[in-house]
Image (cartoon, rainbow, N blue to C red; front, side):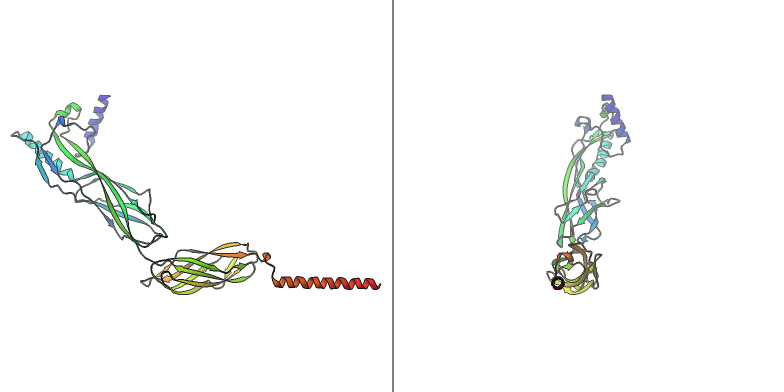
Length: 350
């Protein structure tokens, strides 16, 4: 078993690039520490592109991690002496110690602390093998977020917990690691783990938003009627020159599907009256009619609201007995009764 482990360790070290972690970490007995280095990685996050989003939007947040770690200097820990070989090893240790500010095995996970923003779990975790000071990654980390349709406008913060490792100590070996099956290992590296949480700011921009606050009127199968729909601007900005439009399908129809509402300030309500007709075969139930608001935003750009459902009740014609129907029924009964009396009188005379 020991032979198998040593062989695997030898293969791992031989195949690994300089600076990679050793498969088996030698202890302090096999190494000499000539210097201590001072400095650590210092991780920052920057957002690429616009940080302003709209309600209901699904977007990519692209993050670039940067390492601003600074190597402050070295402190001698062991006497180098006069041996040229020891002096060479001490200089080599300084070279290895210079990687102290490099972050290894970087893992970043985006977390939303509000129900108004959802982070796609398939993209919430991103990794980097290494992050050198002053060197930006080739590709940014990309996280997918979805903004709720009901999210209030304003500033939000997403959290980005980041974990990584860095070199805490480098020591030079003097060839004694050959006993461990590591003849080519001239130094050993010890690592520490660091965790930091970065903040990613973003903004949900204010906009007009509409909701149906009231519906008056009802339809009857085989007849037409007026339906009054009240729209309320529940957003943060005024909607100028607004028009309400309904989209009806069989068994309903409308000759006038667009109504001018004018300007609608935040919190203000406007009522649109639509003339609708229902086919005689229409089933008695509540019908959901699609509607939308077309308006101009603060910049004069034409915008369209999300689809707004208008619930319209419809009653069956057979379910009601009108006054006209009752009058006709009465006339028929009177005519039948008179006809019956006339026939009976004729029979009596005979």
